[in-house]
Image 1 (cartoon, one colour):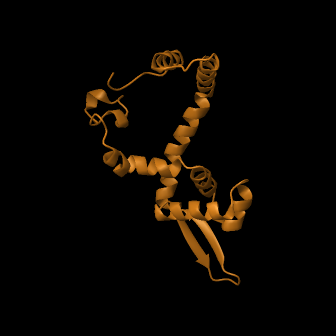
Image 2 (cartoon, helix red, strand yellow):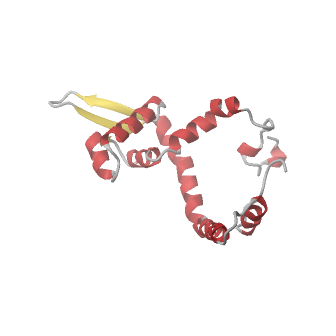
Image 3 (cartoon, rainbow, N blue to C red):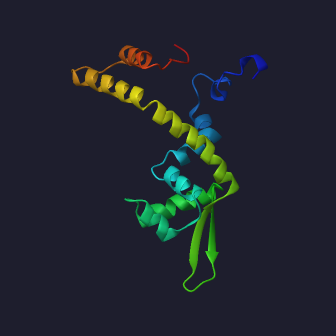
Length: 162
């Protein structure tokens, strides 16, 4: 990116092939990370661990609706990605504690940016959904033209090839 185009988001600064090959999309590091943080529980677990280390059962009590199996799978996935560290303390019975790694702590900044964006745009998102649902409820599918109009009226911009 040149110094004169500093307002271009980094995701838009790179050319993509058209169409985007499925293999390339699946192998993309961004897609991989978004799969992790886009699941049902990972962001919440990262945020809770961002406030300090937690034991397994403490996390389970803090997250209503998560099963033991799903918490285990989520923590293992975050550990595998290097975002969470698992420490077994030599007590009787053994005590296991989870904490964010340095890498995991760096994820809090972009997650906070997304959270701030969502809160700041809540009204526009709600209005866009209401408009879409009203058009869909009127007996017709709000096709691409209607979706574009809704997006434009809510302040979104259409990008990419037409």
